[in-house]
Length: 363
Image 1 (cartoon, one colour):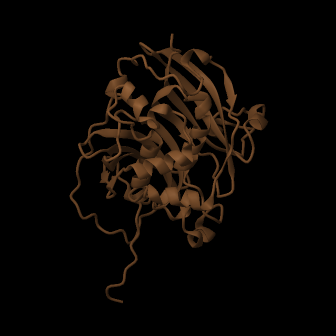
Image 2 (spheres, rainbow, N blue to C red):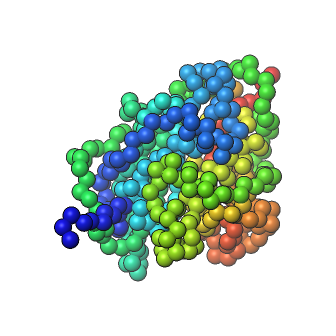
Image 3 (cartoon, rainbow, N blue to C red):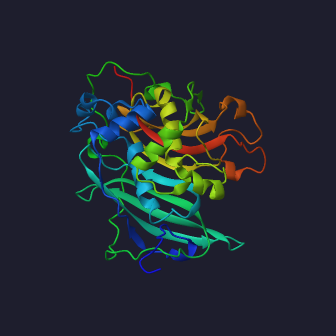
């Protein structure tokens, strides 16, 4: 019938060419309402993203937009071109937040194809892309690499991109915004959580006390607020046939953010920046009604100049059971699942290494 069409988006393995750059069509102005909604859901204790006065004492002009919001926007914007046809998101690599973003900034993203490798069976493959999230001035506020598992073949019915291809912006080298690059000035701030740099020791393990039950309407609302267009997260009819869970699967960026938020009162109450995330994966999926728990282990400490130090932790999220029950299992809670030959933990839903810039104890 003339004039009838069904468009398809995302890409399959045959559509990816190394070196291609996708300028994702979404362009969204971040406002106070969006940041407040995310803050209420994540309940992250890092004060710089909650308190304007705290942020100004550190040298910022206002409280920055939380990095979890930026990561979720960057991931979601890229789905339209990269992973709307994907089977699974496999890995987070070298996530950084090199500049502050503020309410009122308008954000867009681009992704470049780093690799596209078929599996030994040839029915699927792994694609790696690098995504940059930029504001209206071309300043990169979030960058990350990620891997996705995609089916072999080509997408039929994808509309031709209507704009000429553009190169990707330069990948930022640093991980800290200017006010934090030379250490942290003394603060007059006298309230907040515990956990200064001196309070952490390499090898410390935290089983964070509170859980977070994921609501069906909550995860769908936040997924669509981010403009994530993969139907596995919000289309129940699609999921009955094509979801491994036979129902809607919670978007992984939210799972990651909720788990990191659950760690924050113990780890990030005196942190001033997320220096980076790396070596992250989602070994198992989450559906509405699952309850998330978080566990952390301190891997490294490093002095970072006046007033601050770097604390590196491995964070693990589990569903419907605390990390304590899996801590002594064969293979171990903090061992990456894909490297295990035995003792895999079916309740583990996310694992990632996080580096935090943490204040030293005031004198």
